[in-house]
Image 1 (cartoon, one colour):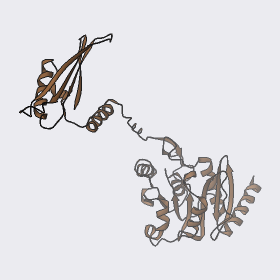
Image 2 (cartoon, helix red, strand yellow):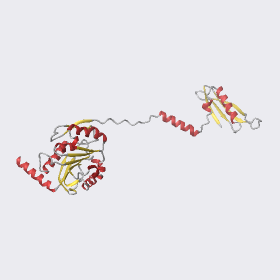
Image 3 (spheres, helix red, strand yellow):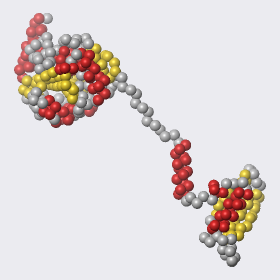
Image 4 (cartoon, helix red, strand yellow):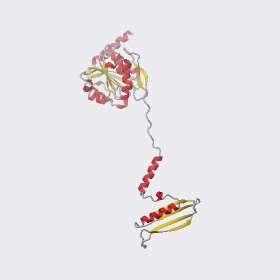
Amino acid sequence: MAMAVSLPSNLYQFRINFTPNIGSSSPNLSLFNVSSTPSRNRRPSSTIVLSYIGESGKGAASETKRKLLEQYGLNPDEFLSESSPKTRRRKERQHTRKGAQVPTEEPKPPRITHKLLQVLGGKARRKKLLSPKGMDVRPMMEVVKGAAFDILQAAGGCPASLRPGRWLDLYSGTGSVGIEAISRGCSEVHFVEMDPWVVSDVLRPNLEWTGFVDVSVIHPVRVEIFLERAEQFVGKGGAFDYISVTPPYTAVDYGILMNEIANSALVGEDTFIVVEYPLGTDMLDSCGCLIKVTDRRFGRTHLAIYGPKWAEKKRKSGNSTETMQV
């Protein structure tokens, strides 16, 4: 075994070699010799090289090396450690990791709300509604919402208000569509929203502010799960009179979603379905037993409404009457 120790401020390098005294009657006694060479370094230093061979003289050699190191003012424990090279490398890596800065994930800013939405018509008209500040929840634009209810009222044969009935608001978010439905004459609305914060800090406060809590049911589940277990969630109420579908544009496949809705027990022969979808999406001309009553564009947003065949005739009749009045 060999070991080198650097000493400060000497002009020579000392080499001390230990070898077990094989011929001696004391096997634990080790011999050593010291050699020195002048140092050519700019900054003088000294080196002690300790070496020994054999297991029998290990104890005595270690003690001798300890004493020698102490004579030079060094700590023997720092140089006579029996840790393996692997252990030393591991300690070095740990020391390096301790000194390095570990990137920490920045905490997400708190979600806040503001009042930019409002009820457009009916008994809660002009009441402000909460909505999340940011793009994580995207409510239906008011111009689109107003057009959708105008079309539904005309198609139902009552331009002043909605036909009384039950409304299902899928991907409800702020609840602005369902609240608008109650304000305009619907008797009951079921809201489906999976985000707990939106339910507790936006949707429920909006229902309390408008006074519609008693005629509302909140389902805090994913829309896919709600459609699979529709009868369990809704009970014996049967098909809805109105269904609004306003999902995050990039989070759904509209073909699959509309097929699931059409084949569910939620849709009846007289149901109206309001669908908001992005530009570039192909929507079918029918949804189960329902036909497409209208399809309008608002910038990059499209609005499709499906309903029974009789609704299209009433809508056209209502439009012609309005034109004549103008």
